[in-house]
Every structure is written in structure tokens, then in C-alpha cells.
Image (cartoon, rainbow over all chains, first blue to last red; front, top):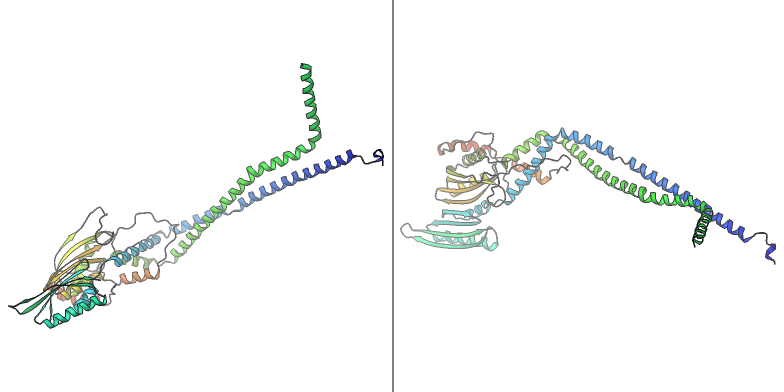
Length: 178
Length: 254
């Protein structure tokens, strides 16, 4: 077949392709423009609709209301402060009285407390009596406290003496309080 | 030569002209796409970043508002008279400064209640700069050495009474012998915090443990509103029975 008799020339086909390409390009550009404008307007509107100013206004109003109750707030804050500090003081302060009461409770009635000193968790006690039996019982009870790991940590008998003139035995002991 | 150059230039202009005529329909869409790309980078992205930032700010501000509302609601429902009462009780237990009157009253009260006569006593005021700290903790305190007249049991009772009497104290040294004794007591105090109170800070609601502490210390002997009792031993027997009846309902903190 002769090319001369082909009514649709190659040139027209190329032109048509180019027209299509141009049309696509134009469509793309318009789509881009619309998309960009839409997104931009959308974000702008979103920014506008954020209720930041409303929240700030409400904050100011609530803060103004709280200002009328400021005295209450101060009192309550200071109560919290006092509680924290009192709790610390009470938990940290030493109190040897319960242990001391237990020790004094073990002193037999036949014995008399001649002297007692407590400082920095250490107790020194002097008892005297006319018989060695109550003194022995007292020592046993104190040793028992130490062995059970309650009231005292350790026990040192510093002296046991007899005053021949009065017939009294004197016991000196030292212990570390738990 | 010059004619050659002129011809070449004319040819290039002619080429450009042909190219322009050929692609002039693409020119406008190309500019539009370029403008769109520029808008994305210079308008949309910053706008979006601003949106995210505002949203974050809104979140923060909303949280602040919630705290403020919660503070307001809490303060509105707070019983002012009970708060004042609790505050007074707590301040008597831990004064904000050196409460000499409170200390003397506490000693007098314990003395009267236990029947232990108080002899000489000596204050160690410590530093007056407000930064003094003695004893086991960083809390400032006033140290006082007291001579007592009474047996060991009476001295122990005196100490027990002091421990449940405002202001808060700690006995650091006990010495007894025969019918006399001496003790060293630290009376604690603590200045109020100096910083301004922020209305927008969340209020720490008292726990059950805190309320229990308030109840406990409110039940301590508190002689701030009573007259200071005399320290003369001859008058003590008269007041001790009265004081004993007053303090029967006190609660020990231990």
C-alpha cells in the first residue's frame, strides 16, 4: 500500500498527542492550584476555629474568681506546709520513753533506781538493793530483752558493788536502746 | 566575520522564537504549578506548623484551665472556719518562729499535770539569723535544759506529757538520780515558706494520713489560750489535779 494514499498523516497524529499532553498539563496545574488553595483555606480556617482566646478568657475569669478565695488558698497551702514539716519532725525525733518504761517495768520492787541517764540512744542505769536475788532477776530480764532483740541492742554491766556499812548492793549497767 | 556573528545571533533568536511559539501554551500551566509548589513551601507548611503549635498551646492552656477550675471548685467547697482552726492548731505545734511563751506554757502545763516541780532552766536560743539547725534534722530549734524535782517515774511522765504538748519537742538528754533530774529539750519551729502562692498550681488535697495527723496534733495539750501556770512547787499540787482532769482526753502521738 502506498503511503501517499493514507489520509491521516503522521503529523496530525503527533499534533493530537501534543494537544492531549497539553490538556493533561493544564488539568494538572489547575488541580494543583485548587488543591493548594483549598488546603490553605482549610488550614487558615482551622487556625481560626481553635478556641485559644476563649480558653484564655475563661482562664482569666476563673483566676479572678479564685482571687476572691485567695485567703483560703493561702491558709490551705500553709496547712499543707505545716503538715509536711510536723510529720517530718515527729517521724525523725527520738523517743526513748517506751523503751525506758519497759526497762523501768522490769525493776523489781526490792530495788531502787539510784540514777539513770539517757543520751544519744544510750542508757546508763544504777540500781541498788539489799539482796542479790532481785538484782539477778533484773539482769536476767535485761539479758532477755537483748536476746529477744527488743528494747536494747546490747548490755554492759559496768559494776556490781557492796557497801558493807549499809549492806546495799549497787549495780551499774549500760545499754544501747533499740 | 561580523556578518557571520550577526547571522548566528539572528538564528538563535529565531530558534528561541520558534521554541516560544511551540511551547507558549505550556508556559502558564508551568508557572501555575511552580507557584503552587512555592505556596506549599512558603504558605501551607508554615500555616500547618502554626496550627500544630496552636493546638499544643491550646492543650496546655486547657490543662491550666482545668487546674484553675478544679482549684476554684475545691476552694469554694472548703470550710474556711475548719481550715483556720486546723491552721491554728498546726501552727501551735510547729510555730513559725521562736515561741518562748508557748515553750514556757508547755513546761508549766506538763509540770502541773505530772506534779513534777520545775527548778532552774536555761534557754539556748541559737542563731537569730533563722538558719540555725540543731538536733537530728534541719529544723531550727530552741534548746532548753530543765532541772526537775521528782523521782524517775515522775520525770518519765513529765517527758511523756511534753511529747504530747504543743509546740513539738524532742528530749535529747535525761538524767535522774534520787529525787531530782535534769532534761534537755529541743522545741522545734519552722518559718513559713517565703515564695508567692501560685493560684494556677494544682492544690494538693490532704490525704487521710494528713487528716489523721491534724486530728492527732489537735488533741495535743495546747495551753496557748490558758494562763501560764505558776512554777512554784507549793502551788503545783493544787493545779495538778485540775490539769489532770483537763488532759485526760489527750491522745498520745506514739
